[in-house]
Length: 68
Image 1 (tube, one colour):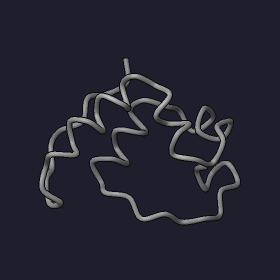
Image 2 (spheres, one colour; image 1 turned 90 degrees about the vertical axis):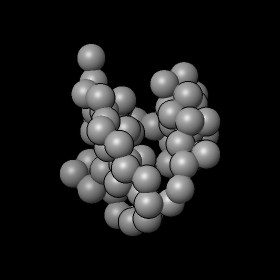
Image 3 (cartoon, rainbow, N blue to C red; image 1 turned 90 degrees about the horizontal axis):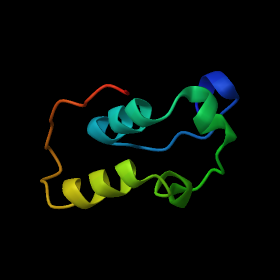
Image 4 (cartoon, rainbow, N blue to C red; image 1 turned 180 degrees about the horizontal axis):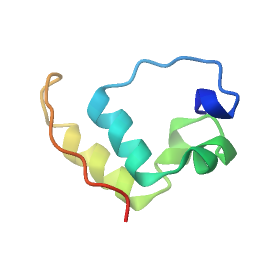
């Protein structure tokens, strides 16, 4: 949950993953989701991203497409 929406727990997240989540969801949408990774994976765009990025090295960076 975003800090702006009352989130308190800090979870380490790679920058490309963080940008992809925010490109796919608004803060309001994230605040309404259960605090579990599987909630994010319910969206096909995130599942495809996770499959794609899994084969990349830890220091991998790429541009993130903006939300449509």
